[in-house]
Image 1 (tube, one colour):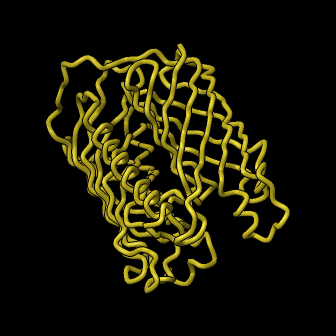
Image 2 (cartoon, one colour):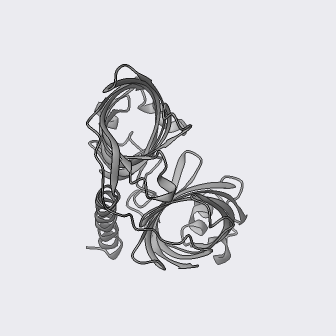
Length: 361
């Protein structure tokens, strides 16, 4: 078996194990109290054709069914005021099951209230997705997904209307994205916005007597990340390495802001430019340097970081001038954490990053 195929298999196996372990960590390691319930969501929408080739197989509207069990965080956790955490299962018909298949995902999620009356929520979820149809010689039109297992990110907005003490009805908007982060090509990824209704049933409140694990918010964070990506189907698997530094400017708050920079070595960039018609490429084209802003929510051992920035150095700046990143870091102790993140350029995932973080107080 060629080295590139063995390495690809190793990376896929590692990604699936890491995401599965992360799901267990997110749902099992947090102490809960008070509100808990079950939500059932049904919706209708469409798959965004963010690449012209996608019109070859997007034929109908998308449909989504979502079932979520949710609980409140422990009230003693400083950043958890009015926050809820849930574990959801979602089933998506992206619009053409014969070509695009069905998407199924298990994903932890956190609900952020817009106000203290807890009627409007912002939902952030991520987890492991399985797609029944992928790109192949027979299914060559399906160039959005080439692996059965993928990373899923879900953003949602919900407005809740109370019916009784135990029941409520919500209007909800979901934006569901899944892709493999270019570990295997082709990987355009799918973006599916849906609008619908959900019904919530609240159970008897539960109270936790356990004290949460509370770490001091760090002043500096340094990360070493690695990954790989593929440009063409059955092509080379290119390594991607990244060194990052982040400075938290409000570390004493429950949720804190910061800024930072990434130095990225992306071995695929030189060939990517060559395939696009640029014959004057150099090794330096593989280097990227970023500047970014960060917003971080610490939840016991878990740290959620939303990031956005631009590139100071990027040989493909005309097409990759802004990036976004969702990063999850799990603290092994107060100074060391393991992390996984998804970096994207607008609607297209660029790479899934795995690594370690070192924190300074």
